[in-house]
Image (cartoon, rainbow, N blue to C red; front, side):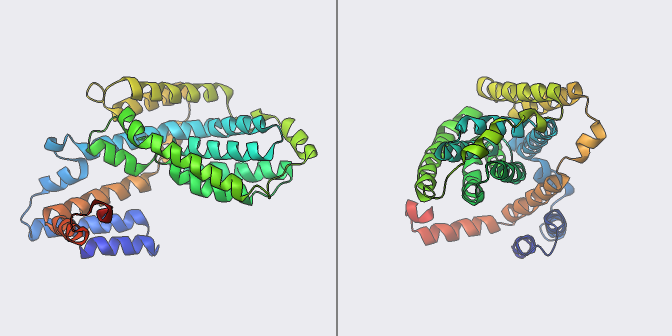
Length: 322
């Protein structure tokens, strides 16, 4: 438990890189399991990739994350998300409330596909650029996006790392997750949107001159490679269709994502070494460390004690436990 708390403190205080902190914690847990719990090295392999009884759940999660990373990176190289965003923004026709709605919808749409950090990296510069062209204050849009990016991260089972880990572990299908969580996310998006439209209604305005300049802006300026743009859009649409139509027991989602990623990488003709170098290895190493730490907590019985303590605090009250 002390190791787990120590890793969390190091990550929160940013005293140490999160991947290094989790790996240090994993190494400490390894020695505890080997010398104090009389475990063998096999248990570490099970913690890293999941045991056969669990269906190698951790390995499936890692493969799905890597597959999605490759697809998203290629799409980012093509300027796919910027291209879609600017085309949608042009639909506002100079109406500020409609522009706010479109900005919000784009935020939820992109964050439902990308991780939150990459979504912010794409949207914030895009929002500032559009605001400068239209000569408007970007603050209302940026603050709204900061809230909605978290809602978008709960729409699909692939929208965030926690979603991937949870759905893989409990064998929840793509469509099942969307029907039970994604729809609620859209409802939350609707209420949040109404709140911000009402809150910022007096601050939203667009000059006719600014909108005229924006309409004349060439959207293809953000596209690095037209052919790659079409390929990445097709790959994303195909992947979502396969997620919905193919049951997980026939072809696991991780293998679907990895297959589409490899095919897209081949036909894109991007430099493989450069593409691989842009995969977030820090995140992969961080997750591997966390897998070992969390598994060690379960093996030593500490997770069970924490669960009993939480149950005691809740006193069988469901809402109190939430």
